[in-house]
Amino acid sequence: MSIEVKNLCHVYEAGTPSESRALEDVSFTIENGKFVGIVGHTGSGKSTLLQHLNGLLKPTSGQILIDGVDITADGTSMLDIRKKVGLVFQYPEYQLFEETIAKDVAFGPKNLGIEGEELENLVREAIEMVGLDYEDYKDKSPFEISGGQKRRVAIAGVLAMKPEILILDEPTAGLDPRAHKDVMDMIKNIHEKYHNTVIFVSHNMNDIANLSDQVLVFAKAKLLKDASPREVFAMKEWVLDKDLDLPDVTNLCEALREKGFDLSETIIDIDQAEKEIYDIFK
Amino acid sequence: MIRDITLGQYYNADSVIHRLDPRIKIIASLLYIVELFVVDSFIGFFYATAALGLVIALSKVPLSFIFRGMKALLIILIFTFVINLFMIDGTIIFKLWIFTISKEGLYAALFMTFRLVLLITGTSLLTLTTKPISLTDGLERLLYPLSKLKVPTHEIAMMMTIALRFIPTLLEETDKIIKAQQARGADFESGNLINRAKNLIPIIVPLFVSAFRIAHDLAMAMEARCYKGGEGRTRLHPMKYGKRDLVAYVLVFAFLASIILLRIFI
Image (cartoon, rainbow over all chains, first blue to last red; front, top):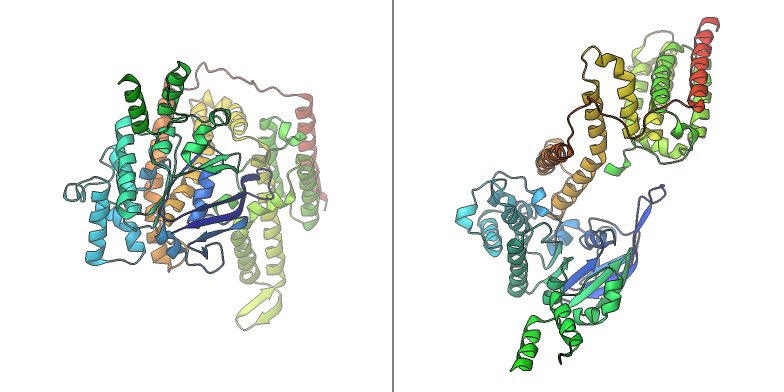
């Protein structure tokens, strides 16, 4: 599934004193199967953009094409879009409501009209995909498990709909380092297994550098940069000027270069850094 | 959809009405309600409308904004109108099948609707021009004499402040939950009444969980800042009447007197 966004604008509460422009003339293309990172400050329009991608918000102007189909046109089936594009909100654990984990995960596919054995298989697959044991967890209440586990269950609730495009808004916000790593590994596994398009918002530059093929930088409702992570992090001054940060590994290599060590410019890959540093001391 | 509710909302502007002491605004609003029930003629209503129009003009709140809040109450207005129109007996002026309209009914329907519109517009002006915090501050001060009778006035005011403060938060939370469930394919817009009610469960359960979480966090945060009730608590901005407030008091009571005179002599 490819995504094409053309001149997207969104204005909240147009015509009132609290009118605010959330997106201004945003255009970009995401090819099928890409892993895309979105960075930018709170209030830069990221969340608004994500909600457009599965039809929850209608653009004030502009177009969104998913596999060539304009989802902003009148008469598009919302259920079809929601099936194709799975959106995991920030703190998704706050949307859990069922008595058991299995029932909660089944909510999405059930809304798509899936029943019986097929439903159970989807639920089982989704729960195992997020790293929980189906038999152990299916009958537990989603309110009695830990925060990190709740997050996984909520993500499983979207995965069970088998979206071809998976969108995650700050999937690791508020998690401890261990749960953070688990969730990021899990997202990586999902991408490798299903070859779906993944879009994720993150403030963690290490994750952005590690995982994404393409980075979209937002600031003040505008798309400032659409490039590969290496290209983005090569513009060190610019990145810092936009109040963003460099990945830890890039910072380390830059510090070493300043001390006179012979390393390549803009290393964003830990394996590459390891190899080059090893070569120096060999 | 949820954002359209303007009832109880604050409209940010810089006007004489906004700057008035909240106490005078509360008293004026209460008197205004009483006055609307004192009025018994259309002339009185036109007089009250003119006065209200003047206050709205002074408040710089656009009319469209005030009427947008009224849209939600349209059903109540229509209901009142229709019930009065058909249910009151008297000299019949119109008859169709089982529906009859009497002269008295028409009069009562127009009269009640007029009164309701004025009531809603006038009282919504209070919250439109007063920040919730100063509103409850004002209320606390007005209720202060009752605290001598062991009425927990500070607690009442604090509960109201918190309730008002969290209306937008909970609305936002509801909006988020609705969207999250919609993203999972939930449909809240079609189906019959029973199905629609059932469809609310995925919204209501998480909303309750959120409300309790927020309440718990807030209680913790207040305790961490040594909140221990109203006793000995001082204010950052003590309320003081200014010249403007005294003028307002004079005008409010002059208006009350004129309404009473109108009732007696016309």
